Length: 263
Image (cartoon, rainbow, N blue to C red; front, side, top):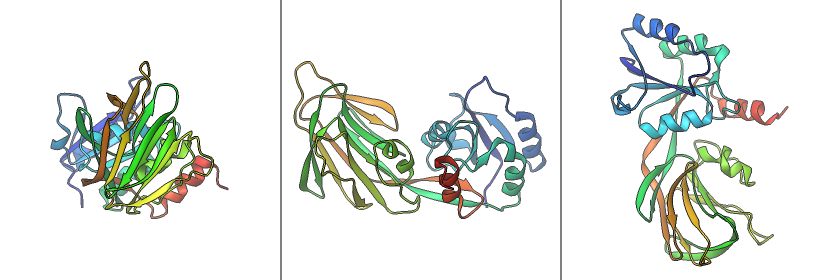
């Protein structure tokens, strides 16, 4: 059962109309307080975040504090990670207050890269701004292959419906304990995505880069670091877990059917 004393609201943008007064009044009836999330409110002080947007808004909410449960309402265009659409808001909030919900806990990646480290919700991408690069891939200390292409992507089950999906990776059930490694536009037509256990220690090493070429590390779609030839990235399971709230046990397949037109 969730505490709802302090609930944060994260909005996609300020151009849409959001039912903030409704949420404020509902939370007030159960002794809760609503806060619009900005830089002045630490997310670790919240019991719940209601993200009103698409998957990008959900990722922002989870990034603020992966330990804080997130209820995502789709005000965007895709919404694989959302629990329902805006027309269902009143019903979803009512079920939340009645403790009629489930919490989906997702494994995350921990990434160490040149210049920093980060918790990864969706994926880590190492890629060049132009031309192909060579990346040595090692798992648990053993070199398994060299990927030659636009780059390499390593993602979580949650990320399998994000960038991984667009590069032809598999769709993975959100509660699966695994990671997915794939090349991006790889210059090898026999290449395939690799499913790795969550216990795997993954090591990427950028081996070649032309003098006028640039390469970057991206974390969940945002540029984290520019890297040079010889740069190394280490990936392993994070001790943290993301928590998303849903209301139906078949929510994942419902979202797939709706978003991908599986009828």
